[in-house]
Image (tube, rainbow, N blue to C red):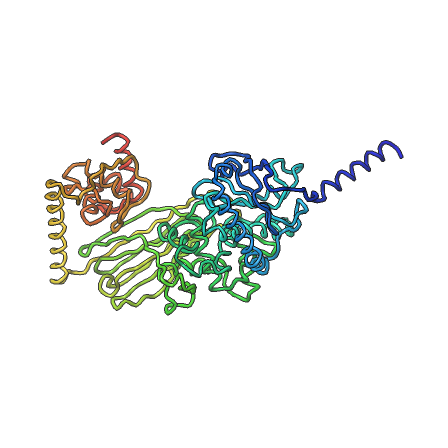
Length: 573
């Protein structure tokens, strides 16, 4: 055989070996291995961690950071080992059979030829519970930082936590997804949908049935505090998990678990895969309608108004987010124009109350974008109705409500941008939209005039009481000085316990008693703060009001008002 033929034979043998999973390596309890880890998740941004094999079960190799494990007392080590026994049993009897029956199997025996999964407990950032690296599913000749094994990473902080089984289930779904999507279809699932399926695993397994202390309760809490977080953008924050979790619960409750399953077992990813799964399930709805209905359900959550306008999960039946509140003065003609920005597939909930007369809301954005704008009206009897604003080709539209404040208590508009359908990877761009509110006040009745006079007197009395308490050492005013360097967010009437509002009040106080005579700092955006903002806006009307086409202050701290405040803050004025 010639040299060239020998070289070809050696190359073929080498390629065959590289394409074949490694044989199982003998391991023993107490062995130490240096593992590659993700610097972005690691508590001290390490790229490698030395870990000790502390336990082997029928399913797992359990490794724990060596330095941490060695520092534990024997009693604590035994307690942890007992917990890992229970975790392994839970996995064998419940997690593995349930999740594989729903989503399909992981790659087994996998890249290392071993049916066991390696679990590494490492010190992670406090906000992290665990992660999975697709890198480990490849040999090191392909990816040098691979650990060449089916492997999941869990936080050391959770090693004896009640949440450990939920975290394990979550990361195991990522292992399944790699096999069902990456290996079978050679596709990388979009992160938001990958996380959606994984996070829903705790509900599939019944771990969220007891709501108190559950993963679902945590998601609801974070969603309620920051609902306007894009479902499809992924930065890995708790608010990303919250919004995608609540959307997924709505999706599955309304359309069935097969939407998640069929989207996974398809040759599509992201929104396109959800649309494929909806069609396969016989639904005529597409992702855009599902998302729009979800934004409505999140604020009214009432099946009697429409079967799609509520959560069906028993633990979510009381969920109602609090919209951003905009107060319209009771008397006189009023106009307000606000410019804001949003990202694709983000809910924005804007509530308008007060006023008396005919209300008009003009909505506009950029031509070429695709906004959906449902709105909710509640009449004087407390009945709510859902309507939809039709936008023209220029992304403009108008809502008109007669006798607002008399026949109707409030209106909530829910604009959402729905232009982008794929390619979600990291931080998304923001796009502008504007809403202008005008109200032609009816002639005040004697009763309305009396109410307004009383409200004005109450506001003055509150200011005087606050001054007296402050002089006598009362605690109406914040006793700790608040440092205010820059306002990052829009602020409005009705906000409570807000550090941003404290910052605003600190600034207003610095502008003197002509602007903010009360001068106290509470974090609550009430009528006195609103009055101070209006005075400030009218003082700098040419910069903050004229560009919006209005002459009277609104009390809403939008982009132009914040810009002027931040300029003055930077100058120390």
